[in-house]
Length: 455
Ligand code: PLP
Image (cartoon, rainbow, N blue to C red; front, side):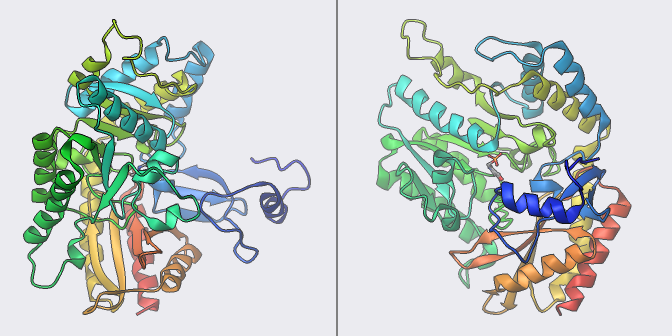
C-alpha cells in the first residue's frame, strides 16, 4: 500500500502530485487530475480509490506480460542480492545470457549493445551507423532518413529522427542530419491509385532522397516495421521489400525500430519478421522487460560489429557508455520475461487476440465517425473522421471525449497522430499479450457501447 506520509487519501496525493511532479507530455490541468495508480494485476490497474481499469494500452505499449508477475520480481530480486550492479565496460552473466537469447529471438547474427530506453537505443544506432561508415572508407555518410509521423524518442537525436512536428515545437533547431519522407498511409492515398502503386511511390521517395542528397552522404534509414504511435500505419509488403532493396543498392544501413513492435506485439517475435526483412540494426526497449525495469538494446549485425575491432586505432571501438545500460537485475528480469512469453505462448497469443479484436471491431466501420480500422498483431488503430468521403480527421475534442467516456466505464485506450499536421484522430489499442478472453470481451463491449453514444 502506498504510504503518503501524512493523512493520505487521493485528494492529498493529487495536491502533492500537482506540487511536486512534472508529468510526461501531459499539460498541467486543474480540471483533470491524473489517475494515480496503486496496483496492477493481469491486464487491470487499480487506482488509489480502488477503481479498476482494463489497461487497453499496456501502459505505453509496453507491459506485454501484464501486471503483477511475481516471476519477474523474483528474478530481479535474486539478481540484486547476487550482484546488483557491474558496468558493461566489463561483463556479467545476465547480460551475456540475455544477449545470446536476443540473438535467438532475432533469428540472425547480431551483437547486442545495452542501454536504458528506446531513445537511447536509437541514439546508439545512429552513432554506430556513422562510425561504421567512417571506418569502412565512407566518411561522408552521416545523414539518416526517417518518415513523417514516425516516433523514435525524446532525446535530441531520436527526436530529430521523429517525424511529428508537434513533438519538436520549441525544441528546435534539432540535428539537420535527419531527413523525412511521407509514410505509406494507404487510407490517405491519392484517389485513383492502388495501394500497391501508392506504396511503391512512397518507397521511391526514399530512393529519390538518397539520390538527391548523394548516396555517399547517407548513413542509414530508420523506420518502425509499422508506424505505431504515429497512427498505426501498416505498409504493404512491397513497400518494405523496396526499402530493403534501396538500402542494399546504395550501401545505406537499415535500422528497424522495434521499440513497440518487438517482443511479440506483432504476433511474431519482432515486427520485421512478419515481412521477412533482414535489418542491419534493430533497436528495442519496452516489451524487453515488459517495462518492469528500464532496459533497451541495439542489436547490430555481426559483420558491422567487426568494423569496430581494429586494435591498431585507439578510436575504432564504439566510444559510448551509459552507466545503467545492461544493469544485471534488468537483464535477469528480461531473460525471465522472454522465458515467460515462451512458456505461455504469448507471441502466438498476441496474433490470435489481435485477429479477434480486429474482426469484432470491424462492425464499427459502419459507424459514422469511423473511417478506417487497421491492425498489426495486437496493435489496433481506429481512425476517426467527420466525413467518410473527404476523410476529414475528427477533431481532437471528439477523440478525447471518446477516450474519457471509455475511462468512465473502466477502459483505458490511447490516441495518436500529429496535432500540427491535423491528424490526432486515431484511437489506439494495445492490451497486454497475456490478456484473457474475458479481458478482451470487456474491452470490445465497452468500446462498442461508447462508440454507440457518439453515433
Ligand atoms: N521508438 C518508438 C517506436 C517508440 O514508440 C518510443 C517510445 O514510445 C521510442 C522509440 C522511445 O522510447 P523511450 O520512451 O523508452 O525512450
